[in-house]
Length: 124
Length: 103
Image 1 (cartoon, rainbow over the protein chains, first blue to last red):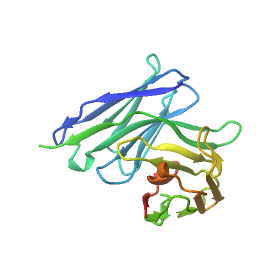
Image 2: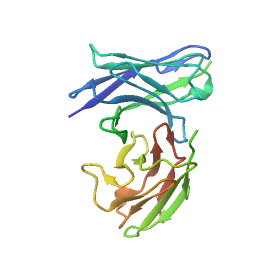
Image 3: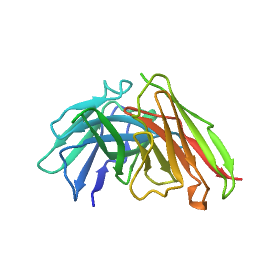
């Protein structure tokens, strides 16, 4: 059974860089995309971006200038960096497995496995 | 960018009721739509993918339909554990959510 375990700093000051990592246990790392999603307090879900095992990425245009998602296939891990954080970046951050691909044609089957969430607070 | 608009944003219903949540896309997205359930303090849970396919382990009282720009999530007979917030999602975008509360 696939499990995602995430970790990272929970308290940041404005202008610092948020850094989170998500490890994949018990399943294949290739053949999927791996995504980051966040949820500000009391608000809805916002997709941040995704990466596959080859390092191909897609980002939310509204965050693209500040986001970097990377992958370490030797450890079955992927990471999120968000630069120049402000209070507006305060949120619970989740990692998730995305079932999508292009063989034999494009398909999208949603995010079926999620991490436990990490609360990140940006405050001076 | 494609926008997803859910209606209603809030829904009050009773155990045993049949409820329907609608998700409208600002442009056609074929059947690339998923539905999630989220309870307070928990990660979202995938219910439906490809607009109408039930995720493994999800009760059959949940169903999805639609394609193109209009989609629905239906719960045929509400159970106490179904009171939660529901989100639709297409690649890259979530709807704003529908909070289902007990009447």
